Image (tube, rainbow, N blue to C red):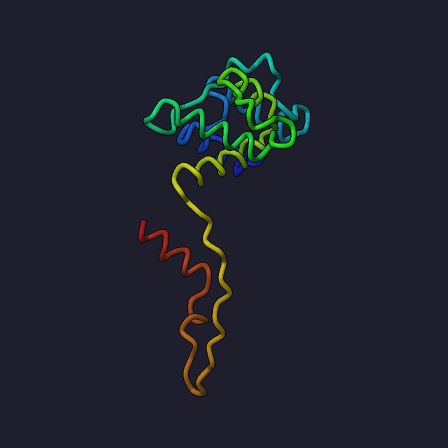
Amino acid sequence: MSSELYQLYEYLAHKHQLLLPDSAFCTLDFLQSIESGNKKAIPLDKARDFYLPVVSFAPTTTEDLYRHCILQSLLKPYIPESKVPNREFLIKIMATFELETLLKMTKLILMIQYKCLEIPIKEPDKKEEIPGKKNVDSDIDENELDNILDNME
């Protein structure tokens, strides 16, 4: 079991608590079974272990947000937009999603809720080297930069 996957799952489950099992169901055995491929999805009988945490103060907004994410990202080809899923349906459908899907949807929900858009990666401009002058950026290696950042925290 990779510790990175477990830490990411724990972070999402306990800090954001979005679209993931509650802490009683989020066990190391469960995560290991997903990673090993023995359990690709959470069975429907475990749906009661899921819940819709509030991500907004208005009571209808939370369900609208989840509904939007589910309809737009997964169910759009299968469910007519006029038929709005209720809370029970959302919980049951979430219980069948694979971990990777849950993580993607969590990211989508966070982006919608907090309007966090991914910053596009820009290629650094190539600086013209002046003869006889060192490029300052090349003087710092990655380890030194990591140490500087660690000391800032």
